Length: 217
Ligand SMILES: [Zn+2]
Image 1 (cartoon, helix red, strand yellow):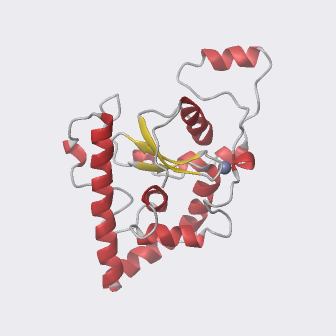
Image 2: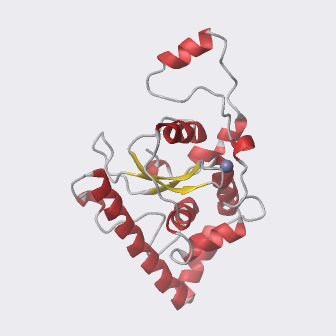
Image 3: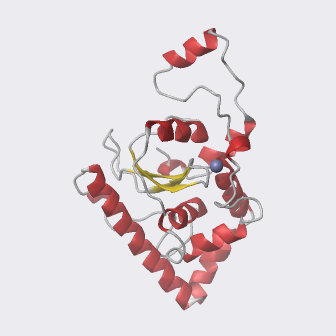
């Protein structure tokens, strides 16, 4: 995949996609065909000191919504069940876990951080034994390409009718003209006073909250 360092415009796009300020983004490991980020690679230790295990965070609102619908349909329980009966799949899931840890190590070095002992050997999304967050697995698949996280690949296949990385849906997936969320609200207030305030679109509702709260920076 065309893995690249984040540009300032990428950080603004990520913040608009998630309706919150992003932080500690080290890399954009997957992009839409139009160039917008699909996944953010986040430092394993945030600048406030907190360990952050979700290295690959799915950010595109249309993708996260599609994955949320899969989760609501009970796919995670079904996949977890299959891990107990399909030996090949279970082995692939463990290998995906190892790849996730190796990728996090690469991101850690790229960010110039010391080892993050608190999450040593701990990946994300329920790996290596379970499926607890499909967004994590799909984000991993998009970041590293197909053939490494098989359940993430399957998740991509199963949402393909509503979203694929090959078709740009960015224009209708978030408000591109909204003020960029940031901790310093002065800009927001200033723009609001100037009449630039816009209503929050309801489409942002299920995107950032669909990922587990404890993994949400
Ligand atoms: Zn796009």
